[in-house]
Length: 162
Image: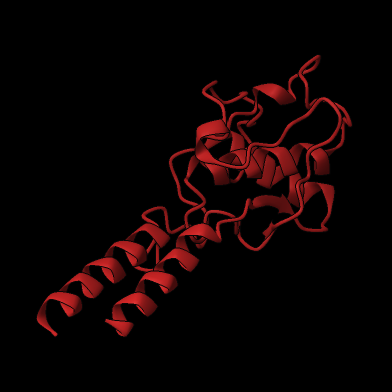
């Protein structure tokens, strides 16, 4: 019975420790960040807020727009492992990058439902049909939901048999 209580406490620790995460672009040249921005917007990010007069247009810099686009992509992919890599140009952070008037989504449910902004250019080396280098859209085997389900099932079996 003590083992079951320990397992329940451990399970609660895993399920209640979720913290918000965002995806932002790393330091880099505007050329590299523009390619990342183009890819994210062409591959499903909601880039409508980046349009002129949109809530996230200012500051009008490649880096700021890249940050919003990769985060939108990351959230729409359910924060799947690898979906914030963008060939090494982006990284996950626990610091909210939102600014006055521009709220960055922190989950897939708040990632927007608009269509991509169309900021991709025909000369972009990224295709909206290709994948992000390192993108593991299925979440991999260590997906949190999978882990919790597996662990819970294991504990139920252990409780009933022992």
